[in-house]
Amino acid sequence: MSKTSLKNIQKQKKKARRTIDRPTQTRIQGNTAAARKRLKKLSGLARAKKASA
Image (cartoon, rainbow, N blue to C red; front, side):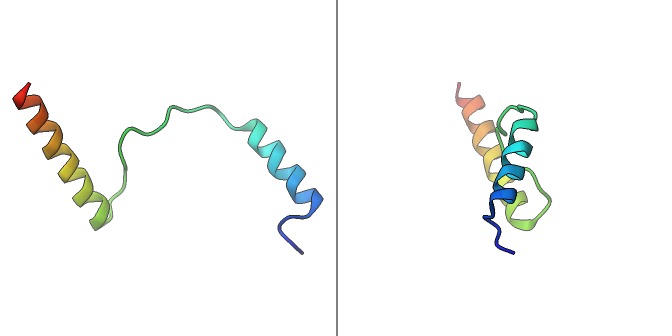
């Protein structure tokens, strides 16, 4: 069955209406090597910015 059938579209719309509004993420989260590296870099930049201010 195709993903864009009328029933599936209606189902997606109903699910979208039920979602809870959440604030957008300010930083990435995760435990992968790439994510950890990015967090480490961002924290370093934040520390440098705080120290210069």
